[in-house]
Image (cartoon, rainbow, N blue to C red; front, side, top):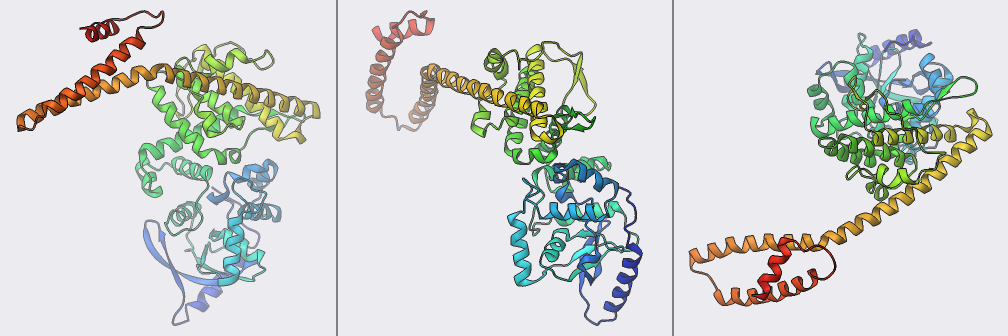
Length: 475
């Protein structure tokens, strides 16, 4: 990405050149080895004034967190070197990935470690003073009012592609102390795709497997991007606001589980899979926990159609129109015919929740009445969703109870099959114990008589299997 030149780049360049010349005269100067364009390269380490350097506006560590304040994020895009933009980057680097405007306990621990033991590893900078690695360390040093930071200096022919590749390489080393957050990892992979890297090279860089990690990350990011796009609402002053990447940081487990269930169901039941995707999106937005989310399925007609749709009041119920075509999250550019009505209604319902969340989470952009209306819709939808989940859980338990006798007989049948094989093997080796078998067969007959007696009760239709059992025990 192209950026304007930092204001003090010329002064920084001269200072850095002078300090490099000084350290190169020393007999035992400090160096650090980095992977530079596919090969290891040793570069010199110097000391620089902490206040003289710039945070990297492209650091992957806070990509998602930038969206927590859209106006400041836009200012960062327009002028990343301004004092306001650099202050915003510093706040995010110090912040909790889940609540970026609050200080991260991990950052405080890093600052305490530096206070006690000093800076153990050098950062990396460009020849103009932009930090490639060590952004968070610089924030900690500033916080501690330290004057200098040790940094290695990249070659003069550096580029932003070099910066991105180097940061990624350093981040993925096992000894690195602070991993990318969930969404930032997805965005880092996406950036590599945008740069035209092959799937094989991306998987190698991130030390991941194509199936499932790469495929899952691509599907989840497409799902999140789609949700953000659908959440957009126009404010009274004409500004478009919506949900943000950071809003999905806490949902890693739920989204990975959704991907797994969706891909399994989509093979044989695309409509059920679509219902599952949309109903679980609504569940995420309504803060259902993992156990409750698991009751939202797409099988057997789908949770939305079977449990939720019949309970929706007119104020929340979606329109019944079916679109001519829809795009599928995770499959960029692929357009397919419109989904069946239940899946379409589930999507429209999720859209209502998405837009309500946008309004409720940004009350300053809307009238008090509009924000209150959105909050009431979310409250009502959550109650209805939880009621539907409880009914679905009850139905699942009932089905499990009703199927339990048949399942147990099935297991007994499998055990008898194994007995036949064991009997054959025992006869072939001369180890057959007929008395023991006879004793257990009499026990089996007694239990079969009880099964026939209880299964024959009631007004249900007697099938061929039960007729055979009754006849067999009466013989």
